[in-house]
Amino acid sequence: MLHPIRALALTAVLLAPPALAQPAGLAETVLHIAETAEVTRAPDEVVAVLRAESRAGTAAAAQEAVNRSITAAVERARAVEGVQVSTGGYWTARVEEARSWQASQTVTLRGQAAPALLELAGALQGQGLAMASLDWQLTRETARLAREEASRLALESLRRRAATVAGQLGMELVGLREVRIDVPERGPRPMMMAARTSGPAPVAVAEDAVVSATVEAVAVLRPR
Image 1 (tube, helix red, strand yellow):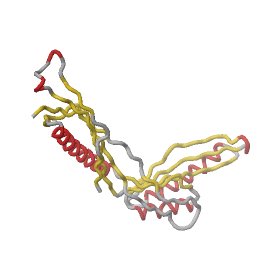
Image 2 (cartoon, rainbow, N blue to C red):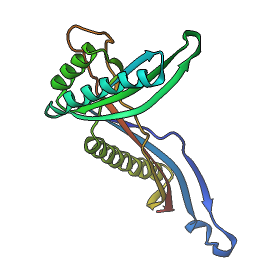
Image 3 (cartoon, rainbow, N blue to C red):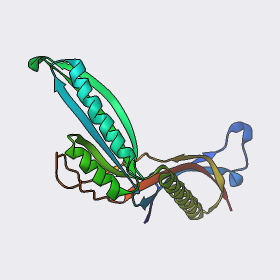
Image 4 (cartoon, helix red, strand yellow):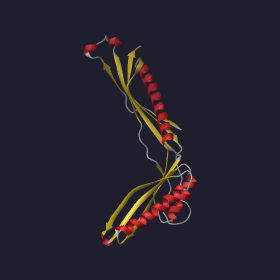
């Protein structure tokens, strides 16, 4: 779906520096104008982050347990077609009140084959890993194309609006200058998830992602 959004602010001023002064009838007017457009796209990639944790009497013991869990998780993930796996930050700290050490590391699963990835995530939960996050998002290529489409729609809407305002002022649109395109970054959409140690795979229900672009420009108007 496409959602153009009207300009946020319009301001017109006469442009007539003393050094370049023109007859009043030929003075140009600059119009500060902005337009925003939105497009929606269905998320096409699932990202799951799971965490392995261990607590033991020594740092070495806690880390050894985490290392085993992460190694097993990576090996299992690499065997699933269409799923990319990577490891995240490693953390170790002393738990003073319990007089023990705690270690933790994350593993990230990413892929467009949602059923296979979710089944894998459920299996890793069954092995003792905790689900840290589970998100739908756009792949880089899908997001890039959506940004380009939103930018194009915003620019077209801005030109139409500028021409309309020019007509209302009895002027014509000469052109645009100082054009700025700002595409807000949108994070992945959250979806239903469950952190458990056994049972079926996590539930993943996605919603369309909204990608927007705002175009700001200075439109130059001239009397007809």
